[in-house]
Image (cartoon, rainbow over all chains, first blue to last red; front, side, top):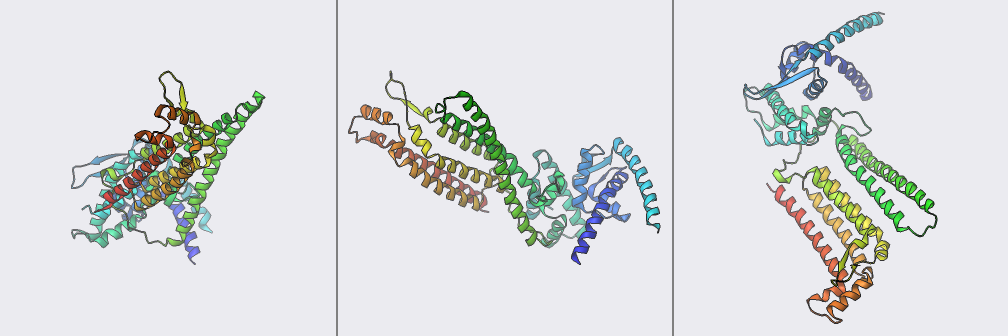
Length: 111
Length: 333
């Protein structure tokens, strides 16, 4: 039984790993800090844990898809991330891929 | 809202990260944890239990660090230990390669002259040194990997979801053992061993002003004891590796240091107790200079080997006390 759950969760993990990047890029068209992004995503039904999101943000920044800046104006300093031009460009391409994949998946899963 | 436990957690994550990432990740985690606590408790002051729940949600510090460094799931050794594994490998392997390379060269030189055909010697240089270095590295890599794989397997059985938040406190200022200190320590012991074994004649004195340099030791006798010098070097690498893993002076570093020094001390007695290790010309010259029955302050030169043994003990005792003292000083609260 436990094995079944483990297998399922590893599939779900793989499924989410690809999609979460697109969610993040789409959601960061305006600057947000990590924790507010988690809240926004969860409002749209996408749940992601902080220990996955924060390293992911950093990795996307390293790849040039996001840029960050520290905002020290508030009660506590926060690191804000926003999608770069390159990030938006990649998002547009990824979106096309996603839409066509979704179409294909639908057709496959119909019967 | 920064408690001791939070500080310890953030430090436990950051210490595995490359230094350029560290301070940024520390700040980011600090504000993340604050956000998570606010979300959980609102305006109410979070309790110790709330903090534990939030940190458990973030997961094991080692795993979070592995995620940050982007090196999770890349190896046989999982995120738990991968960074430590990599760190040990990147330090120990180059040193082992250097050791085996240089000691093989020394071995070839030691046998220099016994062979008549020079091309045979040349062949030996190539085969022994390069072959020796590759063999040494492969051997060390295998041993380190096996150790980590065993530790990993054990961990899987013990670990059932709940994470261990019994983290050590932050080392204060100087309590942290820096990586370069460890590397210097290892390189120093390796070079010392090689010089002493391979170039014993470097240790020489000039007794009479017009006389030549007289080697102190009999290099052939010293080389008979090679296993003890290599043993001392290996013990020293073990000590330094543990410092790298713990990153601070801990009780087990004290225990291992004392244990290694006791073993090395026994080896030193075996090597240095016997006056045969001294070059007989050196001993004779000293007798001439000091007089046959110099029982005064210079008498120890007749037993110069035992004087050296005393010095070695002194250094070892100082090191043991120093490590114990640091561990005590930095760990008392």
